[in-house]
Length: 239
Image (cartoon, rainbow, N blue to C red; front, side, top):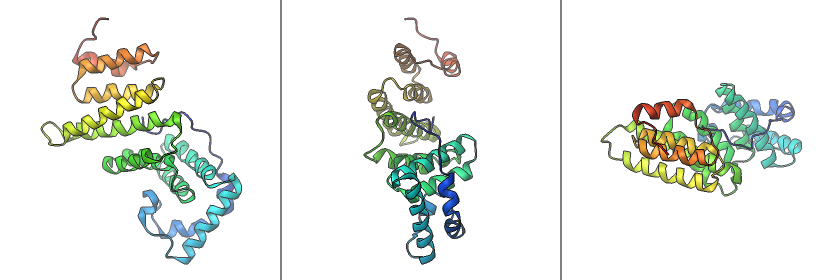
């Protein structure tokens, strides 16, 4: 599931936001804060916007002690809002987090989560690829991030339909990433469950049952919804 990383902590962005809200109004008025990275529009060419951004970033750094610390706190607020189905304000927070630290992987993960909800799978994949390319993804978040990205490739392949030229290649890429994710952190159940669903998309039901068994052997619980869908296609093999 997108955005279900294990190290989320409650955001404390309110102090910095109250301090800098007036300065940040210019950004809200000039650029679309409902697109990742404010729509990719250059921000340095406008003196008023540049000043507003600098004031905002400095306020965040003063409050949280650094760019990464501030960006992480704002992104945490974004995830809270996302889970409350407040995608508009979540996107605003992720954009603000990006403004503070454009190298923070969780920002792009958040962008991808919202884009997926919007049905923009291609753009969501691009954001998660960017997140996964960051060298400092926390060790406990790497496997869930890779699982989310693999899940997007599997979903993309599934939606292409039978006979589409690239369908098999996207499934292959998804399976390779699922394998890497469960190898990176076998104790994390997320990628296992996503891999089972990905194999279901591919009608590889026997292999899906193999992953169910492997996940259970590691102590992971597989939801009945997944098991029921599998049983409807292929009875559970005896062990």
